[in-house]
Length: 324
Figure 1 (cartoon, helix red, strand yellow):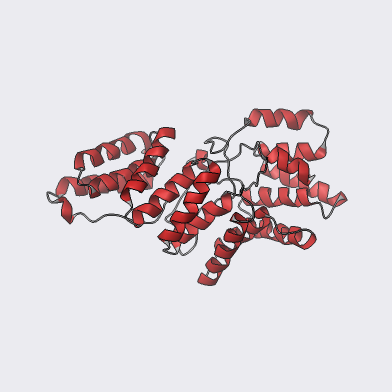
Figure 2: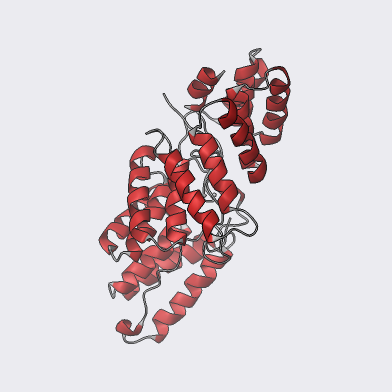
């Protein structure tokens, strides 16, 4: 079943970053001492990050196949997390140690934000089999999203995400989580390196570009940050984070009119769904208008934020580990 899993997962097109993260939704990562919006996966349904086959195709596979393993992973690929959880549980009743079904439960539980439950299944998987990128990432998510996460939990999560990310060259999600956690902990250099590697692995997916841009902004590598954010705009011309960050960089370069143009685009195209960042953009516009001496305007290097909390296209990324 595990072999089938790897081949099917390679074509996954499931939920995007909340981001995105998040995958993709969101609050400032440093606002309440825990990582908001962790990334549980690396491909997307409505806002595709890595997509090979559309959701309707997976639904057709689920309806037509008689193979229980293919049906289970088609259910996952279609984004039916609750149904996938039920199917995986049923499979485990007959095959209690099945690695593929345990992995499916880790994915389904993570996508439903049941991180403690996902960590439980990760523990079972590691008990009966070797640790996998999925199980390590799930345990890291459970640690970092604990209600009263401590610095020790963060350090544990760093170790788990790091181990997951470097357990295989195809792992992506754990690297995105690790990069964001490094930003939370104030390690911009570490975040920059992790996001740079993630960019290679996911072919410049949006979460990796945003993270890399933020990290380089903090390191004052503004040319690199600008390049990353402009690559985001090539895919999504009105991406609120990219527009806002580019406005900040333009302000730093004393290009006030250019900064205002980025902010105008942001407010016109994202106001209804990105309230928090729109308010920040409005505040920045007022600041630009009120300052005659640009040198008096402080550069904003606030934490990576996913501000589309209520934007349903930005669901967290599903954690899948794909090998061709």
